[in-house]
Length: 514
Ligand SMILES: CC(=O)SCCNC(=O)CCNC(=O)[C@H](O)C(C)(C)COP(=O)(O)OP(=O)(O)OC[C@H]1O[C@@H](n2cnc3c(N)ncnc32)[C@H](O)[C@@H]1OP(=O)(O)O
Ligand SMILES: CC(C)C(=O)C(=O)O
Ligand SMILES: [Mg+2]
Image (cartoon, rainbow, N blue to C red; front, side):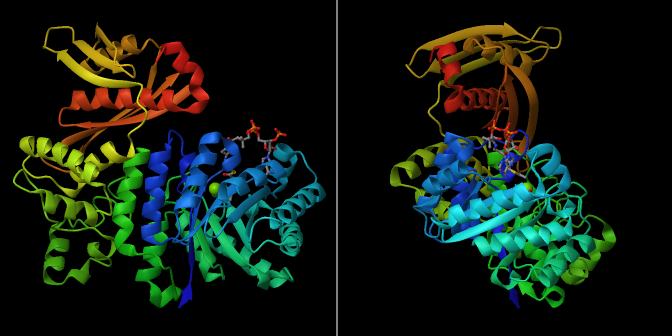
């Protein structure tokens, strides 16, 4: 069996998904879960791109010991310096540097000749080798590059010290056969290619990211890059869970395997979905709600007689539990703590007590507390907690068939000052958001609003995601509650707090006076 390395870029390319904006706590929590999943490399961010990215890459590199942590850098000394500062405390500092090699990108974006691009790539790899033990070099837009040029530049960067060569299908243009053949060509034509590991990085613009990645493996690639749930720039990246499970289920065909703990897939996917607000379509392979649901009579009959008639993957393989223990209002701290540990969290005693109280309050209102509910409580209380500028203290909404909906809200700011306002709207949610806008004193546009239930049942928690904008500043937020209006208000306040917590938005804090 050939071992395939998994390079996870959920926190870098995944975070490039439109509307996704993770804070430091959220990135740390995802990184810990990726370590549990046992990926080989975590690309934690792009250190030179912002102070926030620098800090999160640094903290992740300092914290994660079970796998390698890397960060992205352009072909510039300043990007490489920033990456080294962020990564040097890690167990195995690794740089990921890139430059575009396609005629379109070189001419119009970089405005550099092919020779200048080679010189820049070689200089950056040589410079980085002074610091980094492992350097990965990527030819951005490789699949639309001239193969003779690609051969030439790859030979040079390997001579300069690169140890992993990545051939991205940056715009998701390649087809499996075509993309695979690039790797065969490079293996046959780059004289020093045996010194490096070849890597594939595919985007899903034509829906072929996973097929292209698997084709790359058939053509000798030993590292696959992708994201959890396939999130990422535009249509996203290759879904790592799909690649890993395809290799596992079709070992007979691919004769390759990863070291991922497949049983951690569901948990990782849920965490990433919750924190990014990127909802998983029910029919998504491996992790969608319907991935293991058999609906039609003939299929159900077959599965009842023999599961393998219609089930090629067992839900347990990827951590989907059919009848996980349900907690309720009579459960005690031991069962509660146990379940939390099983969900992969370690909490201090003080945190267990705080979240246990919230669990009991919820259990008073809701018959059964499922893993989804617990994960929601944990994420709300442990992961997304910020230096909040505003807390939602009280809210009231009046709605009647022939009445104008009216909301009254009390917010408490950082200094403990209470702000109370009321406003109307054409619906209850609009009334709430008009009122919150008044309380905060910023003109805010609501760009997206989505609601879903956490699990099933009439008493299920409601989970709301919003995307807001004030002038050029944008942010997203998430709120959960049993009442849909309370969840709506919480999501909005969370988005405002996230907007105000970003270093680059300091000016806004002064504007609102908190
Ligand atoms: C395929 C990918 O996913 S690549 C990664 C993409 N990710 C991101 O861009 C997210 C983070 N990016 C950012 O925060 C910003 O773009 C920054 C901080 C990196 C740069 O910001 P700015 O300095 O304002 O530049 P801006 O983004 O407008 O333009 C990019 C510049 O980098 C240059 N550039 C692009 N790729 C490279 C490269 N690999 N090596 C050197 N220069 C490059 C562009 O030609 C352009 O240069 P120019 O200003 O001389 O025209
Ligand atoms: C930075 C590179 C590897 C990238 O994300 C791409 O080309 O898609
Ligand atoms: Mg990419």
